[in-house]
Every structure is written in structure tokens, then in C-alpha cells.
Image (cartoon, rainbow, N blue to C red):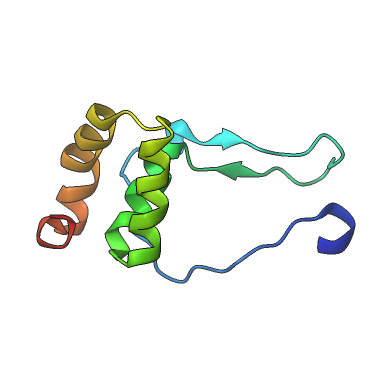
Length: 95
């Protein structure tokens, strides 16, 4: 199926993500798919989920998004403080 629809999935066993991410999921389902519904993180939620891992590749990806002006720093900081920090305790890894 992945060849026909050009979809590749990766299993993620453990992930940390903002608490209220579900309310901001974005529908990315191709119109050609009738029986599968695909949702993706909103960009700020994706960035926060990646930064928790704190690996260089993720930091570089985020830097590129910042440079392109895709992210709102205020939104990012607010979601980190109110939705991610209380459930992950990652303050020491983020700064």
C-alpha cells in the first residue's frame, strides 16, 4: 500500500507531546484515500515533541523553521510552559 499511495509510517514507541495537542491536529488525508483518515501535529506541537528529545538533528530542523518564519515564539513558549513542562519535567533538557 505504501508504494501506491506514497505513504511511509514510522512507529514511535515513546513520545512526549503537548497536553492539548488533540484539539489542534490537522487533517492531512489525501483525497484519494477513502477508508483511512490521517491527522498530523500542528507545527508548534511537532516542534515541542521533537525538542524534548534534544538531539542535534531536531534542533537543526527547528532552527530552519524559525529562520523561515514558520513558528511563533510566543505560542511555542506558552505551550511548553503550560502543556509540556508539567507532564514531562524537561526544563533542564530544554535550556
